Length: 356
Image (cartoon, rainbow, N blue to C red):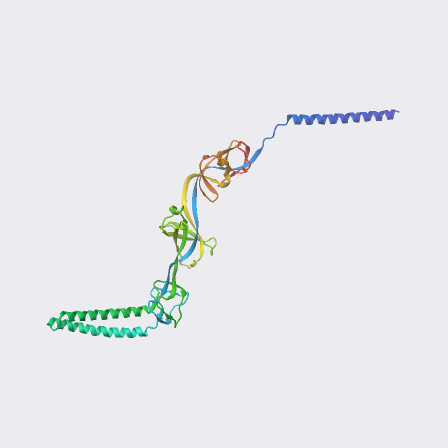
């Protein structure tokens, strides 16, 4: 009986402790809930401190390489080509013969013209003497003078035609194309050679109307050709067209390039990079700092531990950088990272200070 009574007392004590434990836990939860306050959202942000800076605006334009000089040469005389002296890709110097026509008939005509000139000189001398003696009238002397002048002109014409039977290079360069063959009958004006000078080169570009005022002759530029990725070629602006191409409203631009190593070849394409404008002592911000809002472009500025939204006025830009004309000031910290979901007045924590 004593053992049974002891077991009952033990069960009562265990039940009592269980009730007290459950009651105590319930009382603690209610206290916590009653003392909880609304949580304050804090956003981690990266900032940039505004300082006076500079911004360089560039112009990128497609270009194509052109020879410094290029001409298509033709014979001024007609005839059969007797000799070919220079072939494709051969270098030439000024006045070097390229090809020659059969000139046998012209040589014969030159001999005849020379003999005729000697005869007319004799007639002129005799007529002058006879006119001085009064033996012939003025009219016969004038006729002798006319015949002498005509013989001189004929001789000069034949000599010039003989010179024209040889096609020569007007400048030093290279043969880009040979269009005739030995034994071919050509007429005056038939294209025979295409000659180029490429120790210097030109690059042609077209400038939009809204950029033309930013260019001036002699300005330095860089040209990048697709054949040489990442390799800049230094050039200068040579000529700027005085009038726009009517249908596209673009102005022709000519860039001069040195090509002493002959790496640049006519027809290569690429792009030109030139400085358009340089803005100094301005506030420049990264493009990711700009928030597009209903009231216009805006920037979050950190004031203490708060993010304040400022409407700003933007100026010129280049790549991912923009000038801010109004709305922020030197020394202020603007939000660069973590600002997409911010609301004006949100609490923020600066975890990263960025530099540009």
